Amino acid sequence: MQARPSPIRRPLVGALLPLALSLSLAGLALPPAQAGTATGPATSQARDAQAFESLSHQYIEALWRQEPEYAVAVGRYEFAPRASIPDAAQRERAQRLARHWLARFEGVDAARLSAAQRTDLGQLLNKLRADVFALTELREHEWNPSLYNVAGPLDAILNTDYAPLPQRLRALTQRLASVPAYYRAARASLGTPTLEHTELAIAQAPGVLAVLDEVLKVARSSSLPAAEQRLLRQRVDAARQAVDGYRAHLQQRLAELKASGQARSFRLGRSLYDTKFRHDIQSAHSAEQVYAKALAAREALLAQMEQLSDQLWTQTQGDTPKPADRIDKIGRVIAKLSERHVRREDFVKEIRAQIPELERWIMAHDLLTLDPAKPLVVRETPVYQRGVAGAGIEAPGPYRPQDRTYYNVTPLDGLSEADAESSLREYNHWILQILNIHEAIPGHYTQLVYANKSPSLVKALFGNGAMVEGWAVYGERMMLESGYGGNSPEMWLMYCKWNLRSVTNTILDYSVHVLGMQEREALDLLSRQAFQTEREAQEKWRRVQLTSVQLTSYFSGYSEIMELREARRQALGPAFRLKDFHEQFLSYGNAPVSAIAALMAQPATGKP
Image (tube, rainbow, N blue to C red; front, side):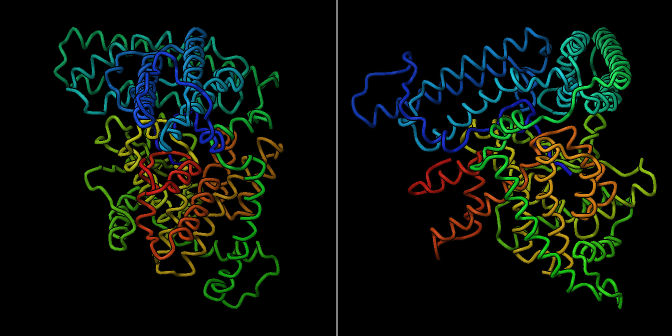
């Protein structure tokens, strides 16, 4: 299941700059308007640092004016009444803004900044370069109809108590006025879409309508005056018509594409993939190198899983002779253990019940300091968000860190008995615990609470997905190393299965988007070779068609964090303390692991 640390990893926001570039941007001058007369090196550097902070703030505020939906996502609700229209003019303005600020930040002399500011500069430069790439080369607005979805900001405005309800409803009334134009622009923006993204957009339309219905339901029980309620109702009706019209248009387009065979392939191809990987992941390695590392990690995991399966064979298989085939042997043991799982109707309830247990473990073993004031709410995934992954974290941005974090879980109610059983076997007694470690404690939820406390607004806003996902995967390993699960071979085998999933994500993503892997090969990789249930394998195949590069973030981030931890252990010797490492690592917001490594190596550790 996919983590969704919401606004921090917004799809069209670029990730971060590779370390080699982010820490070697010297030789460029500050913008002339901000250069001052220095009376000494220290004074001059302080002025440069202040000028950079001012420049960063100016850019961020300009970005919110250009992209009010993004502003709402990170908690700037003064932009709630405004809506952008995704037409050619808006994209041209976005490109001009990105190029303008890219030139200004390229003019900053990185050598005159602190180490922490240099990494901020790296993040800003990469974000801007990624934005230009997305608009001019990737051009997802032409082939992904599911990009066009008004539900997110509406849901956030309606359900966040940033202002009295009547004020929020008035903001919604203003925003809703733009919905018909929004979907007209969406139609005009699409060129030749993919079948898969078209089907996703059609499937998500009922969820958008459900949010509009919720707006009316809340308004009817509010103190909003009757005349304003009528206007809101009219605009909701017009919005519903726009959503229905967009869905009908896509249904017709889908039929035409299937008949003609002219749909765009969902595969990115090597060139686009390599560039997107560089912006999104910011690994010290290329996409191809990370793919090769994943193949090696897969072999090591299978060797460990075979040893554990040998240990558990008699317990799970009785007197049945062991097969010679390693994959078959491991698969049989996993299949037997997977019979132990919660009931379908208890799935969400069990997830909710495990969160306090994980908190108690973290505190009892002194692994991290947790903040009890930051609420985590386990809820059923809103309908408009369903269709890509079954679980994820939706966290508030740094402007409103006090708001609720949602742990979205898609219930199994609507599944057939066979599909529900398949999902429950995948998220069996042991793996459901590992899922909660990954998504909640000490994974995404905990990491994003720390990120919102980072002194660097840049690092909190423009986060690196590989660091975010990598931390969650690292958290799984760290918890088992601390003794969680009683060091039982069952827990370790299921952990290895889950970790193999992260490794396989990288292999799958690269193989599908670059090497042209077909569905049959992908399903074999996932189900037979990675021991995933049929339903889980089918969902992952769907996901790799709908996303690109993101699936590589788990393994790439995790492997770099493990390498960093061992490097710090070697550097500090007896002074190394695991809790200190965790808290220092998390203090840098959502920066790339490579940038965090450079900051942690600074004398006296530097400041975030």
